[in-house]
Amino acid sequence: MCGIIGYLGGREATPILMESLKRLEYRGYDSAGVAVLELPRAGEAVRTSITKSEAKVDTLIEKLEANMPSGRLGIGHTRWATHGKPTYINAHPHTDCKGKIFVVHNGIIENFAELKAELEAEGHEFPSETDTEVVPHLIEKYYKGDFLAAVRAALKRMKGAYALAMFSSDDPELLVGARLNAPLVVGLGEKENYIASDITAIIPYTKRVLVLGEGEVAAVTPLGAEVSSLDGVTVKPKIVHVDWDVTQAQKNGFAHFMLKEIHETPEALANAMRGRLTDDGLVSFREFDVPHEQLRNLNEVILLGMGTSLHAAMIGEYLLEDWVGLPARAVDASEFRYRRPTFADNALGVVITQSGETADTLVALQQAKSRGALTVAVTNVIASSAARDADGAIYLHAGPEIGVASTKTFNSHIVSLCLLAMRLATANDRISLERRHELVEAMRALPEHVKGILARDKEILGLANKYSKYRNFMYAGRGIGYPVALEGALKLKEISYIHAEGTSGGELKHGPIALLDDQFPVVAICTASATKDKMVSNVHEIVARNAPVLALVTKGDRSLDDVATDIFEMPAVEETVSAILNTVMLQLFAYHVAVKLGQDVDQPRNLAKSVTVE
Ligand code: F6R
Image 1 (cartoon, rainbow, N blue to C red):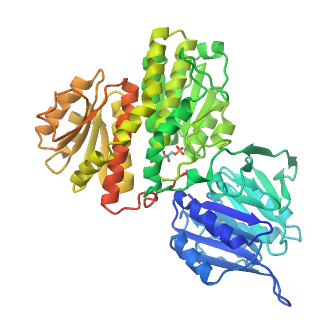
Image 2 (cartoon, rainbow, N blue to C red; image 1 turned 120 degrees about the horizontal axis):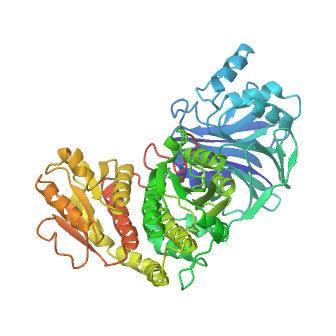
Image 3 (cartoon, protein in one colour; image 1 turned 90 degrees about the horizontal axis):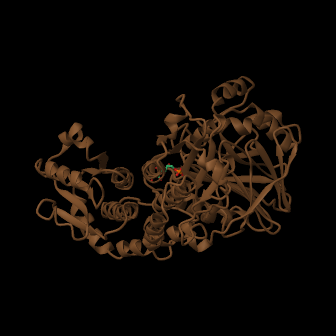
């Protein structure tokens, strides 16, 4: 999704905007641009220079380096096209008729057509096809010398979703940010301040971050920021300290962020457990501190998420049923929001979202809240919208995830859901001390087991090279191996563009098997579980259709030795732990296939890291 950066302070704005846009690239985008209010030279009027590129940020940087605008106030943007193609004209920043007001935007102005017609009738001209362009023109319409007042008046007319950074060349000491249904933060520095769509853009400069609330406007000057509502009522700002480290947002010698982040999994998993799990398997969450009695009364859990997070939710569903005996269902948040879902009297709504900003997931969260459910957000981003909107938060503490494809955070989500299931099982007396000890031991050993898989990278690379010649893949699993199969297929397709689908082993015979032949390999998850023997039978059926099989099996299990084309042995571990190890293997497999095919692994085409529009 679009990335936003704004700077106002004592330094040259352009290099800061360039660096920040580089850091925002991970969000996924197709064009980029900046506007800098230039310092007037003697005898000259103030002017704003706009530089845009209909390609990557590097092209924009080349242009800027050739003709560097000098100024202390500027805004920058990476655009992920929604309205209008990724062209030079459609790239942000956009301006008004007089070229005085400059705006960058993330989100969709749903009533833009109506506003545009009104403004056109009044004589405004719109060179671009974007919805965003109505914003500077609407501000222009209301501008009577007070920029902030004009911004508020314009925002009141807009429907939909927006995160905006704006300035007027009449006010060189004012940078304005506003948000509704899209995230925006203000970074607070020393005599300089920033506006950004996410923290990653500004971590090298400051760790003090003001998180803007829905419908709030920030008036940022070099000395601070004042937050107010659309009606101009002052709001007490919420300032958080971000513990992310700048080196975490760099590649540190890895070829890609995705590879680096897969390698960060052991630490991320340890962080998800840190301070939450006692030796006796008792779990506590600081930001979701709900009394035992309330947890005892729960009679249903609804897990909501999208994409990879939905797959994590599906694993959560299995765990809650199995460990707690509670009715649980994982639901695609984008479907849930348009249904009339039933809720038990004491339901718990768990939203799974790495970014905490996924539009569909946030609306589903609101729906769960409005139906009286207790809600908790399992998220990686402190003070994200999901964390703020839900009754409680379980933070992953996985560090920033820059690669568009989620990797380490999927596994952190699973560990967090294991902890949640243990907490609920204990509150409901559904788990013995002995079983808790078993689980604690299994979970604490997890980071080391993951390191063991990471150490076999060459073996996985060899398999990836061998299988990269195929254009279609099926992934099959049962039990928690089924969501793992879905996730393995998603990882492969999104970064390599190879067609891949996931299925349950049982479903295979009901249709998907028709696709199989010697050019359609199957990745079969056959590690130890209650349904392993059933998977072994499925593999026999697959092989009978001549499809090559890459089977993940538990070490020592010989049942597929003469059947599967390739076997990857996994350590004998608790089933949930094996889901994580299998996923790490499949992530590396997908990564190496995509690299072999020369794809842009960290920024796959058409995808965005944080999907803040519906
Ligand atoms: C796939 C991927 C996406 C996200 C989905 C939800 O690798 O990253 O499918 O999982 O867009 O994002 P979050 O978790 O931020 O809500």
